[in-house]
Image (cartoon, rainbow over all chains, first blue to last red; front, side):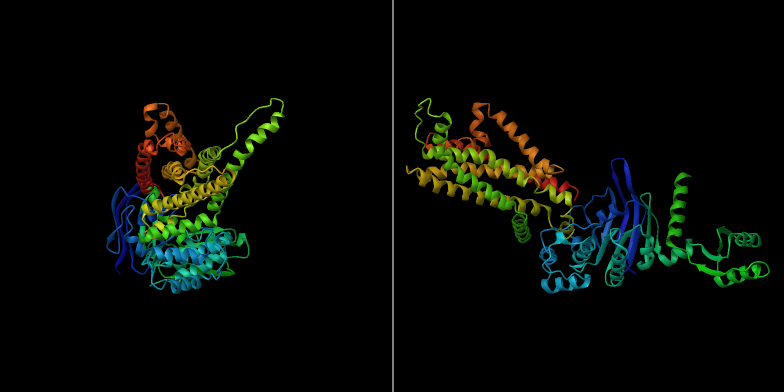
Length: 308
Length: 255
């Protein structure tokens, strides 16, 4: 897959604080790229660099083959941006605001495109001014303005952080519908959101891209698969731990977690065979590795590497 | 030019819907209505307050007294209200992050500065011109002695031109400052410096402040308009410099 966006050896500091250090990664065209990292990792700074709102000290950013420069706006015509809390002119209606954006970006068939966008995000308030909008409505208008110019790259900076669960769900569903049509860079620290819709993940930590790969590859490489056994009480779980002494297992109250590698069927078979004679679980579950585990492992390794 | 026009229209909608223009024009019209009235009533008010005990012979008010009130009102309260209303022109956009969406759509930053400046200039010109015509009409009604239109306009022109400088200064302050106070304090600071420069007599005619200090003298014909030409040129040059500075500032400001 060809890359729509490529960052090479990008560096950025604020005073003596090195926010980004030798940042390099690519985003394949048409993918939904989850950009994760703890607060202050440099996600927003990276996005601002992509939009030409910040000046990098070193390195290059290529978007669809064009160099992104600070203050320049050549690449902005193919980019859509949704900030975490989008700000609008409160005295305008949603239609008026989108008309302003459409006129600035020279969109043909303005009225039709605006109607399409308002319909897509479910905003049907034609006469209501933006100052009367709820946070969720503003977020929807934010999506509409970001998609208005049919961008090749949609940059979303923690778009779900200000939304309630229902709004979050709607937003993620909407984003998922863009797969294949628009390349999406989706920054968040809600890792379950990334797991739900992203096919590529970049883990930013201490100003460096620690891992950047398809989510499935990261799962295979880092995630520890587990079997979770549930017992009727804690003493039974403790007895199970004694029986499974040679397995990499640990107990949490009345559950026992067993890490395994390789095939789930083989691992589950071995565990159950060992248990048969002594204790019987009331439930057995296959726990897939979560992005949270992967994230903690990647950033934990990076942390220890930094201290070596 | 196309984008400048779009942004200029946006500025006009903004000033109308946020009631800034309405407030400005109402205030200027009140000043315009009050000027001839205050000039007309001042002798009566003084007589009433002195209670006839001094048997004071006060001169009859003239049209010049009305214009004196007008220029006093506009150059003091009028300018102050203008500065207060427009102080947040850029700083509010920057603090509310409303420019982010537009800049990331490719809006050149210089168009933001120029569209705002032209919008401020239009508002100032309309508000000031309306107040001039209202004062002119009422002055003619209350004080039949004629003043030629040429004299009225000659006195008015420097004030109008001072607005070019004042608004560029307010916009510069609003971009430089982090909040509305920047738009007020920076012009205030520059005005204090200009008043200090005014202490040097040789520099008086070069000082943009002369454009709001000698209007009555020009109206009365005691000072020719040509003497203020250096001040006008300095004001225009300073405005261009300030506008250029505002564009440079905004180009370097985080949006």
